[in-house]
Image 1 (cartoon, rainbow, N blue to C red):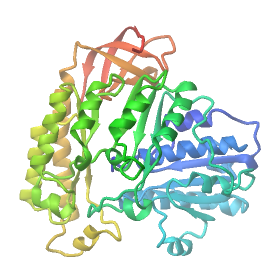
Image 2: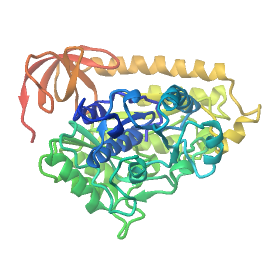
Image 3: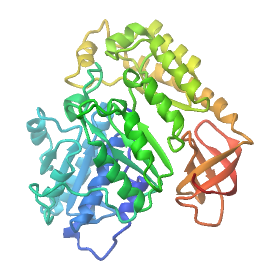
Image 4: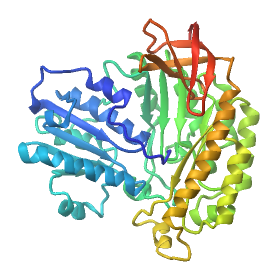
Length: 461
């Protein structure tokens, strides 16, 4: 998964779920979900909202109007936890005014070893629930008719799903990256069975979704723990055949699991979009070894060459951490050169944040290995400026070309959608284009988005 911190309190998918019921439901049967973190957290929240509606709850626009408040948390960086603590302080006033309000802290902040600590620090929280445990959260709702000993909830059976839906195919992580707390919070890898995933996708697409993104912490390692050891290439083929599916994506990959078979499969299947998120984290072999990433710069560049040979128009996305313990200026320069060499379409850049319990956190305590906070931010800004220029140049090559855009919604009076390479496109038109494929001529380009003129509708292949 991408480690970029993102807030999703008004995410399109969640807003659509909340729009299904308005003022007729009493507060006692209303919920409010607030989410911080990666796409896995967003997917968990989408599934939770669907499940809560399935047991008789309705969404609330504000936490003040809900009797059941869930905060889905992230612990990848300290700033994410600080946002959650701030939100809990805000909802504490609701708890004081309405003591019957139930507050749940859910997600990656909640681990087996820290619940007692949180109970002392966060007395306003009634329940602490581990990541992805949708059933457990639903069972805590005060007026829920669901019990934990019942069969698993059909959490993806939405009446009106959004255009693009994220489907988790795997939970947990077996990697031991020095900087990452996710294995400590989400546990060991557990792959969902192929048939179960395909059936869920079939239900979602049958209800109107057009695009599916398969999610995993290390998504390209899916299946190694299942009978027969299927792999992600096998799953992509199975999902690709679901009737009505228009686009198929997956994230986030790890270079150690990106095989020739997987690359060839993505290139072969027309509904698989030519976009690969392949986090590199650093561009220096010594630093990659400290990070415990399991590959070298040469191995990574070889993968990039294979991918671009198989898919010349592929969009490559990566994640980079600056200021990791042990990152000298010389090692940082290696990362800068890697960005300039590969010329990614998008780079998620984060300054290193020590996470308790990780190997890198112990290294950070050593002054000889730690990078000063100010220097971390300077390095982050330096890479962001380089990448902005690269993205500007890569997107400029699309000016005057035509692209297929799957329209997701409206934004400030313009329709918003994405190309096969996941580039954001805006265009104007008086008709409703949500869920439709539009052929758009690109007129203006920038580093973050494109603007164009609608030519016509395109029928899915």
